[in-house]
Amino acid sequence: MAGIDEVYEMVVKGKTKAVELAVQEALAEGCAPAEILNAGMIRAMDEVGAQFKTGEIFVPEMLMSARAMKKGVEVLRPQLVTGKVGSAGRAVIGTVAGDLHDIGKNLVAMMLESAGFEVIDLGVDVSREKFVKAVEKNPDISLVCCSALLTTTLQSLRDTVASLNRASFRKNIKIMVGGAPVTQALADEIGADAYTKDAAECARRARELVGFLQTLRKY
Image (cartoon, rainbow, N blue to C red; front, side, top):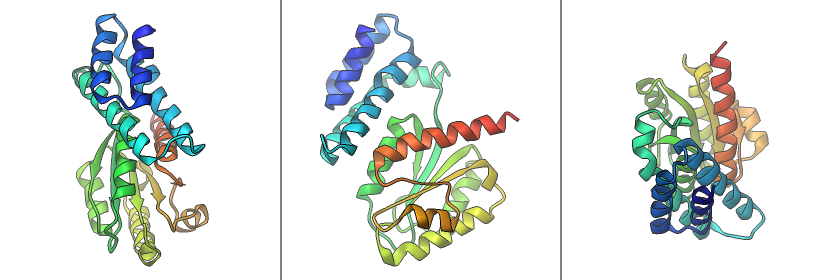
């Protein structure tokens, strides 16, 4: 476990260059790729998320850890491609129509990637039609994340979620919403599956939702 512990420490500390070497050394020691990913990197990001929630660290530190995690995953990518390590699934993310804010959305995308998701980032000012078409073009998508950072674009969020709820693929996806003016009450009202107040919580909740969805698909 020494190699995995080193990977964990480098991700928590946001050491991008050091995590590459740590992952390579862990592989050389015979550590299973899945164990490096789960016990090393994902566990580290869970800790980073917990520290962020308690105010021990802030957005810059969390971004550094997310970048370190992303670099570590790149080293593991050959194992991911050969199927030796499972992916959490594919996700679509975007800021709704009329809203040009992207900092929060970008952070969530990085955290989702850190949690093992392959993320399709649609960018900002994304129409409800574009969200729907993205899922139609990629039927293996299991998660759609919609961000609204302005009170004036909450109607766009409502419209986007309504369109997704009417789509034929609705039973195959989970919808997450977030942003400064968004609340749990609003998420419930418009028919989203989940609301989270920050990027760290989003990544954790996303894994739970998609895991449950994959379980349902077996039956």
